[in-house]
Amino acid sequence: MEIGIVAAFAVGLIILCIIGKLVSLPFRILKKLITNSIVGAVMLWVVKLFAVKVEITFLSALVAGFFGIPGVIAVLLYTYFR
Image 1 (cartoon, rainbow, N blue to C red):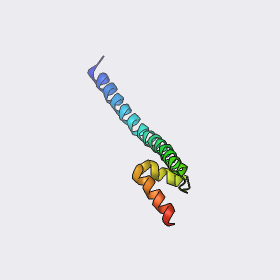
Image 2 (cartoon, helix red, strand yellow; image 1 turned 90 degrees about the vertical axis):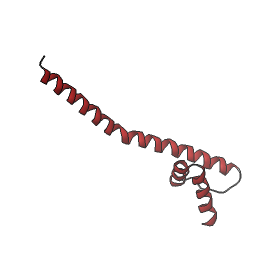
Image 3 (cartoon, one colour; image 1 turned 180 degrees about the vertical axis):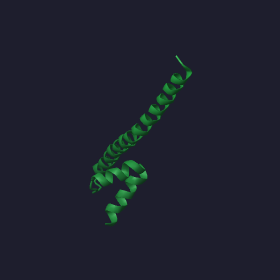
Image 4 (tube, rainbow, N blue to C red; image 1 turned 45 degrees about the horizontal axis):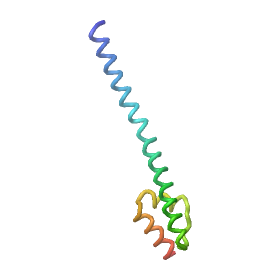
């Protein structure tokens, strides 16, 4: 084999790996966002068990999942002062 063919194969493989990383990044972010939203909805449900009237919507679950406990507090404050 010539050195040029080996070098071209190596460069092509590196470019393919970089493209694979760039394509998989949005899927990882989306998976993390969905997981955090489910956790946020569960946290809001637990708060709702203690007789606090809070609506569990997609947006409130997303805020609670993205920000964690401060997000749950923000949703509760929004619900209380609305």
